[in-house]
Length: 563
Image (tube, rainbow, N blue to C red):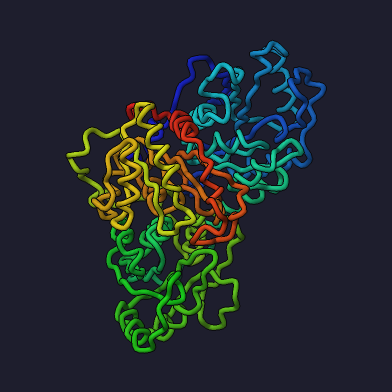
């Protein structure tokens, strides 16, 4: 497994990167004595031109430095919150001879005079033709900045004004925030998972998200048994994993209620002591009629759990209130859930979350509202039980292959078979060893794709078996479907063939190196359609297989599966 092994994702440029660490040293992070480490972020990385200061092309004159409105106050708020700051900037003017290194350093001194000290400056001095590993959208500068600041890329937020900034953050496993300017292209705005109107607004949301996952008060009496609920598909259960671990850290016993589609994923989650499987008709996409006798049976099962507390996790478009009513009838005295609708007496903790928050953080914020947080040392990433995913099948050869998973339970999010076939052929021609995976009902597709290049594993594994295969992959090429979250939980980089039917910022692979491919502006955007509503599947039908090879190169996955 790749979890928390950041060095595997790092690449070193053949040419130097201009770097300047904090003058006092950068051996550790500034934290208040005795205070726990922040849950989400340690550091904020900022692009220079267009983000911190007005963009004057190839400027080498300190007198032309003009901060963007509100920059100093916004940066001081980040400093006051204990976050370290670094500037991460492409400066091809050095390579082109438009200004010297001395002039650039004078520029940076002027920026600090106006905006305060930064803990590190990371500069790529190359042009695109140099094909270095540090020029954004490559992730080299983000990794270098994280090292300078004594943290990892996954604990950094990168703020920038163009798509290259966000792409570099994603490829490193960091969080990207796009602050558009008049030069930002519309397709870059559409592809960004998180946008803000200006730098102060970006800082507001960074700090809000940081606070949202910290409990404001303990849950009250010690929790002996906590009932947690996530009734949906495997991917939905997987993205709730960090929040379930947070609840488990504050409870002696955790019982998970899930539906049949999520049961296999529930078996993979750390922190779960017992599982109750039961479908909820108001959640399932193809629901059966509500059966009163079945509901009475569920109430009895929930009452037998003897839970002190219930935390009901839902997706942003679902309601927790029908289940909250059953939990009240089962005699559970303290119930927490996210609800925009008035809950009356159904909820003791009514939590609200702004639109656009990643699903794992959305769930973590509910756990915090219920009084729970991840313990120090447990990063807010997706995880799998080590005992479940140990033991990859021996007939697959050495680790280091690329997994290509073309299918999805929602056809709107599947890669078109002809596109997946071309991807398999191109990956094989580029020297990658390809394993094509899919469920029992996808055997025809996986056989067709694998015939163009790769080993067909369609229908050969259950979810735990797929997890074992994914854990030894160099990367996974997959749409917005459960195996993408499985890869994130195994810490394996993802080439995300993401259909924009749901927001990428909420459902993209979480805190793992990722390259997004696909048309983010396609007409299916934000429709939440399970079947493609647009003839020809335009969001993914034009994917260039060479772009997938380039994405793997960006993620430091070379031909032959090596890293």
